[in-house]
Image 1 (tube, rainbow, N blue to C red):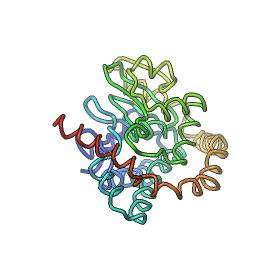
Image 2 (image 1 turned 90 degrees about the vertical axis):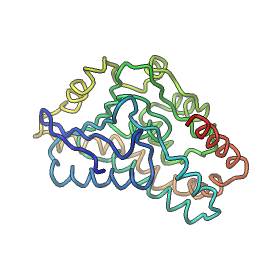
Image 3 (image 1 turned 90 degrees about the horizontal axis):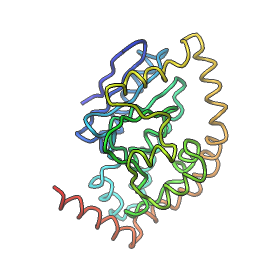
Image 4 (image 1 turned 180 degrees about the vertical axis):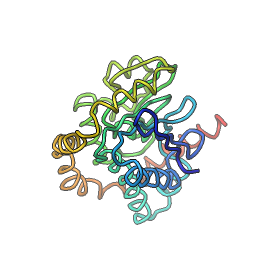
Length: 257
């Protein structure tokens, strides 16, 4: 199902609805690109609010889809998977208009990175969790994503959250700086829209140029250095120890169903 795009108060509201909890797989990637194609063609002057459904913003990568690729023994398949994943995050990160993640619920691993790709993050006050738990489930954090995480959260918090891999309750996540604001659920979209409309449309070029300047060192690092580091990803993803951790996680998910 293509993502819904609705114009509200001169802002493009994009509702991710690939699947019930927006796990990220090839269908999710295709839906994201289709949505941003529409934003660029039909709503190119408007700021963007990205949100999920129910109590989940995005649960991160689809383990079944991804773990099968990691265990395939094919480094080419793993590189192709990562290339597609990287392109989705950079597409949001580099979008020249104001982007706001209206975090309606849980955002874990790749789901939190999707939110960190946005310029601003607003969270609904709910009993939900947030975190970058890739490492404890046997997934090396790609170097390109580390640069985005550091840009959004700062080096110290990026190191803590990436390496420890803990899932945080809302208040602790807020203390670490995951969000720009936490609001009651019924205020989530109106607050996100107010952040998205931080400029008038005639200032779009000023915003785009300033955003590009702010991100310049990050993107240079991604283009010039992370490619070298991420060449090791296929071997890391399919490392024997990491595969055991991934299988443990898969079994945990199956037992919960």
